[in-house]
Image (cartoon, rainbow, N blue to C red):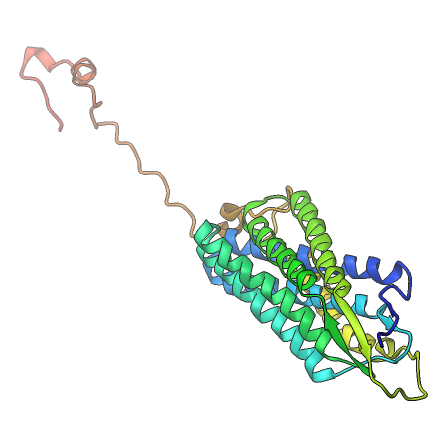
Length: 296
């Protein structure tokens, strides 16, 4: 016997909120990765780590906000907290591998493809590990073709995101890329959810229809949301941000750390011109017809 699955029990509220969080995490991750490429090498690891954590936290938050709307009519749902937190760690670490590969080695095909695969597998791994944390009076079954489609969407979206992070310049372009990434991440989630069926256990308890995900997941979401707000604040108030499409001007950013230029060398009046003809014309005439005076 299969349960009645409803992925939109709160209507459009959870998909819209999930999409916005995916866009926020993607936007912060793209800006951090772009700045790591255009900034001083000593700051590169910090920007890449912040970008990895932003993308991972944003996608994880998107996933579990969307899961708040997942409801099975015949059984209540709860979540295993350690496995739920493990899914967050997987998202940040595996996405971070792809981000660091692109940040240090560029976007050549030999680098971009494996980096995109790592990033996509991190997103897909986070999704399905988070799904395995669900506890109910039944178990999940998946449609394999739909699962493979969701993984493909995640890999393509991850590859495109990494390419955009180090290639697309300007605040508006990055904002548009983050919106596209939000669509891809949210689409991957709901594609994976479309592959789910819930086979109920033979014996159900009297307690049915509870909405345990709200009471359990909501406190867990506070940490990643606060982190994303802090990350956004760091990016907004970074003192090295030069106005003008939000891009880095490396010369202006490094000017405060460079010594002042040396004063110009004086030009002595007795030095002859480089042109020998002009040099002969500019020499003074010898006094009283005597031998020409050569001061140099």
